Amino acid sequence: MTESEFLDRAEQIFQHIQNVLDQAESDIEVTNKGAVLELEFNDGSQIILNRHAPNQELWIAARSGGFHFHWHNETWCDTRDGVAFYDRLIGLIEAACGETVSF
Image: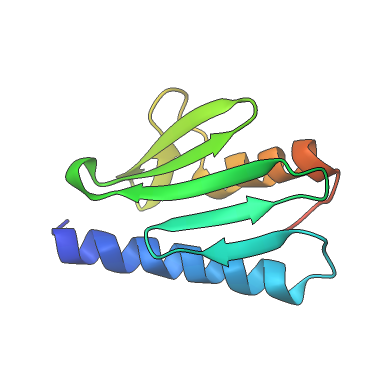
């Protein structure tokens, strides 16, 4: 995929996440800072989503660690264990605040 395609896909994902969380009855504060999307919870903890253009990866940083996702077979998969991006994010949000979201 070209860099432009990567950036477009990443932006679509970030926008989708922001839209879903903004529309949900949730206490998650979402801040879009371009290449970075921050999810902040009532206790002050955060999940940070970032796009890393040089490696064409999406990154998630959370209390439980950092996760890198690469485009593979038409989906974003964790480079270590193959878990899909949204599945990982849903689990991290649930662990952070107990809320269940669906993307």
